[in-house]
Each structure stands twice: as C-alpha cells, then as structure tokens.
Image 1: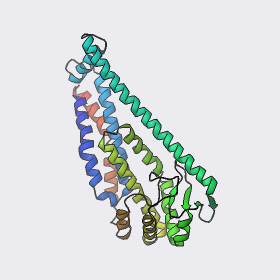
Image 2 (image 1 turned 180 degrees about the vertical axis):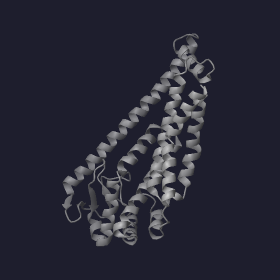
Image 3 (image 1 turned 135 degrees about the vertical axis):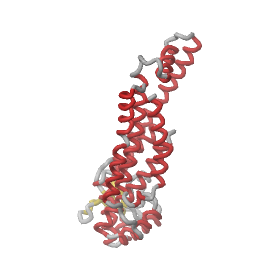
Image 4 (image 1 turned 180 degrees about the horizontal axis):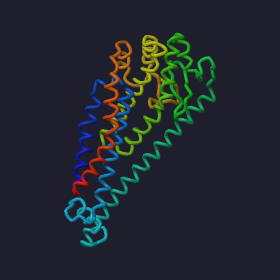
Amino acid sequence: MSAVLLGAFTAALALVAAPRLARARWVLRSPAVAIFAWQMTCAAALVSVGLIGVTTTTHWDSAQSLMCRAWQLCLDAVQGAHGRRTQAAAVLGASLIAGVAIRLTIGACRLAVAERRRRRSVLAMLRLAGSRVPALDATVVPAEHPAAFLVPGGRTDVVVTSAAVRRLTPDELRAVMAHERAHATGRHYWLLRTVRLLHIAFPWIPMFSTALHQVHRLVELRADEIAVRSSGPLALARALVTMAEAGARPAGTDPGLLAMDGGDTAERLERLLQPPAPLSRAGVRLATVAAALLPLTPVAMTVASRYAGIS
C-alpha cells in the first residue's frame, strides 16, 4: 500500500506540482527560490521512485501486498516456474527493461562526451583567436556579432566578441560582464547540467523537460537580477537588445552555453524595465521551507506506513 501512496505522490509531482510551478508568476519575483523549488521537485520525484522500489522489494513476507506478489511472480516466470512460454516472455520483458536502462546510461555518457567536445572546441578557438583583455577580465574573440558567454564546463572564464566590445557602451559592457559573472558565481552551469542529465535519462517524463526549460529561463533571470545591482537595469536592457537583434554567436558555440542573450528575451526585458516587487522575507522563507520538505515527504510517508502497519 505504501508503494501505491508513493506512486500517487510521484504522479502528483509530475502532473500537478510541476505544471503549476512552471505557470507560477511568483517565480519572477524570486528566481533563486524558484530554481531551488525545481531542484527539490526533481529530487522528490527521484526519492519517491527509489522508495517505491525499496518498499516493493523489502516486504517479501507480506502476502497481502499485490505489488510484492506481482514481483515474485515475475521472478518465478524468469526462472521458468510457469512454463517455457511464460519464461520466454518474462526474459524478453527483462531484456527490454535492461536494454532501456543501458540506452539511458549510454545517453548520459554521450552527454558528458558532447560537453567535453564542446569545451575543447571553445578552448581551441580561444587559443587560436582569443586575446586576453585584463581591463575586462575576459577573453575577446573576433566576430561580426556581439555576444558574451561563459567557457563551458563550469569554468569562470568569460568570452566577449570584438563586435560586443565595439558596439556596446562601457556601461552596457560592464552590465554584460556582471551578468556572465553572476552565472559563474551562482554555479548555473552545474544547475543546468543536473536537469539536462535528468531530461536525457528520462526523456519520456515531461516534468524533466519542463524543469530543464524552466531552470534555463530562471538562471538568466537570476543573473539579470544580480547584474542590475551594480550596472542598473537600463544598461543591461540595452545590451540585451543589441545582442538579441544580432541573433548569432561565434562559430564553435551553441545555444546551450550560458550566453548573454539566453532565455526569453521579451520576458527579461519586461522584468528589467518593469521589475516586479520582490517576495517578502516571509514569502521567501515559506517557499524555501515548502520546497525543502518535498524530498522528505516520501520518506515520511514510508516511515508512517511502517508504523501504521501498512505494507
């Protein structure tokens, strides 16, 4: 019964909590809390699914557990206890499950390889054409379009194109640099990498694809939020318009990078020019505590079921 409750909790996360969080307007008022909420929502789903497996396999002495008996029947079928045909079907099903698991593992490995190749490509471009500019604390590369981005791989090196240096005013360039450094200090690359891995590993679960899109959107809003503290909203908005109008990045880069023109440009501009009131301290605490409790909920449900004698 506890496995059924955990399954219902997981379904509620995927079908109710995640869509509501994606549509919520309060996230514009506190992107940092919203990022944390997405992390905890994904973590809660993983914990819940893991506990479903644990509770299903640790109640072998319970004859009343339907899921337990189904699991035992599957094992018996694989071992040939119900005849050759049933055994063949069970082995085929087990092979299919194993094949899916292997494909997911290979997919995750391919993601790591692709990221490594992307990083090497950018570093090679920087070695060939980049020049370090101490005044900017960045590397400038020749390009016709204004752009700025972090070197992929969780590094803190900022790359700016020569067109950006030429076309942006000093205030706008400072705003761009503040935005990219906010990505670096906030470890946004690692936040995105985590949800990207979940999306690759479980491509059939809409919640993880939604999480990837939303976290990418939110890290851009968060970087804007930090950048305006030192540069002001107008300079950052003008720089964003200039880069968005160019609509291109240097060769060797891709939209997966934490680039200045990432996310929803219209939404970012609206938030810069008409900033919403930030969440109150009480609201931040409430949202943070509620999000932090999500991964603990399936654990509490499992423990409560044990003490209540629900198998």
